[in-house]
Amino acid sequence: MNPELQRYIWLELSTQRLVLMPLIQILFFTVLLAGQYYGDPTDLASTAFWLVVLLGGAWGTRLAGEAVIDEVNAGTWDQQRLSSLSPWSMTWGKLVGAPVFTWYGCIPLLLVIVVCMALDEGASSAAFFGMMTLLMVVSSHAVSLLASLHTTLHGTVLSRRVSFGLQLTGLMALTPWALLLSFDLSAGF
Image (cartoon, rainbow, N blue to C red; front, top):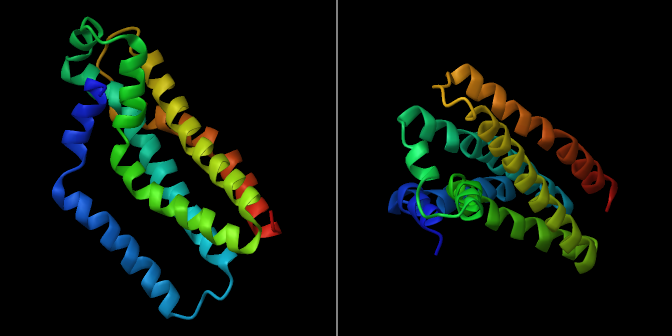
């Protein structure tokens, strides 16, 4: 396993977090379903989609963007660059590893989206929508990580304001996808 990814798994996926995320999701959907708000599977898929946008898109983009910035600010970035890890394994480790907890929460939500859409629209359109949603989140993480990597060329300590600006670049990559996919979801894919 990728050592960078393994490090993030050890840091981010504590026992409390592994238990708390599914409990919060179950509680959230139980309250929504008990409120008799949902009679159509598309409504449930729409709610799960917007939770993916918030959890994976917004929070995960923030975590992916701060992965390199935190290393630079802690003074460990040069040590990581000089380690035996290849640049690709370090990139994938940070891209998937930094937001690993948000991925842990998004995977069940993506399954809810695909199952609900398969009941309403068919399996092929549900699988396509699920893949596009997954691609939306990955691209926002990648843009945020790329922007933070670009700022490390000078090796200076970065402020939280700069970090927030870099995360906005990832969110700007997320926004058109989210709006397009939500329109397709509401219009009946």
